[in-house]
Amino acid sequence: MKERIFSRKFWQKVFNYQLIIWFLLMISYTFSQRNNHFYFIGDLFNLAFSTVIMGLNFYVQFKKDSSKTNTQIVRWLTIVIFPFNFCQIWHITGNFLLKNLPAIEILLVLLLWAVYIFLLVPIAVVHVGPIKNWFLRLLTIYFLDIQYGDAQNLAINPDFRWLHSLTYQGVIAAIALLTMTCFLVKAWGYHFNPNLKFIKSPSFQKKILLALLIMATIDLFYNEFINYDKAIWTVFFGVDIGSFKFSIPNLTAAIEPGILEETERYLLIVIFLAGFNRFPKYRIPVAIYGSAILFGLSHLSNFGWHGESFTATIAQVIGVMGSAFIWAELYLYTGKLWLPMIYHFLMDYISDLQSGWNSAGWSWNGEITDYIYTVLIVGVPLLFSIWMLFGKRRQVMEDNADLILNLNGRQSMI
Image 1 (cartoon, rainbow, N blue to C red):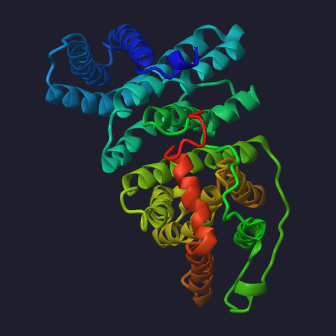
Image 2 (image 1 turned 180 degrees about the vertical axis):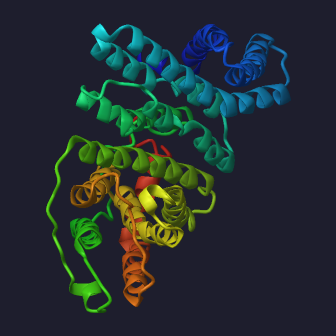
């Protein structure tokens, strides 16, 4: 059974069924929009174009002498088009069912969750799994990591507070990404479980693990509780623990990035480790700083979020890299993804408790203290991360990198 679940042949069959179901549902939906000419024309074009790609999928699959060029073209068209198509038809079908069958809404939501969590696994295994080039792997992530938006479009009754919040705030999308990531990384030949079994490296030191945890905790508390003004001393000592506002949205809004963003960075770390494995001196630094930089750049999307200014967004892009340095090394030193997930969750949750999940995430007034604060939250973790790159500290991360990439056979693929 285990071999079947991880079999590409199995997921190819599932993907074929997905294509047929999508085709039937999309025909029904498209022609239900025929009175709205604007949407009808767009949906009809998407249906026609995607149907051609669907046909090409079956062509290259069943025509044994299909050329590699044809296979690559179909693969990339599928990766670009069908994650969006599948997510779109999921929320359209889900909203239709929720509207017409309100008596069983809870059951429907649970079924929709189950479908969504595994929705993109077949595409990941069948079409992204065979890709070997690290940069192309990196590119595919930005086509697969799209489930957050469609989850928000699912019209769940707000009276079902937990169901609504877990879906709208992206927790289900985060779990879906984590699930897809496990299968995808397995398809690349690495470990299904991102949390390694603890195999103590000869270079492992408890005092270094303690130092990492202390540094991550200091970073957490400094980011969350420092409250500075124009006076320079406040950047170092201006602590303010405000009142906490407990709510379901504040909780779920923090769970989502804890799972989703750390899963994204885990994918980046795996891709960089594998891509630069031929250059052993560079694979660990590239994995740490490459994943941290891309993590920071992803926060450009926060521009305008509840009034967040462009300069504040740039400060956030730079500032969050500091935590990313520490969390990446925390994972590479321990092999436990749940550790950076917990710290990331706490970082967002404490912030949400104090200011609310729907407030601007960063502020910038152009004062000298703003600059000092930004330098501190990036510079101190950067210096610490550089210190971790030497001696036995580095060797532990190298040993775990080998385990992540399954290079030494010390663990099973699970």
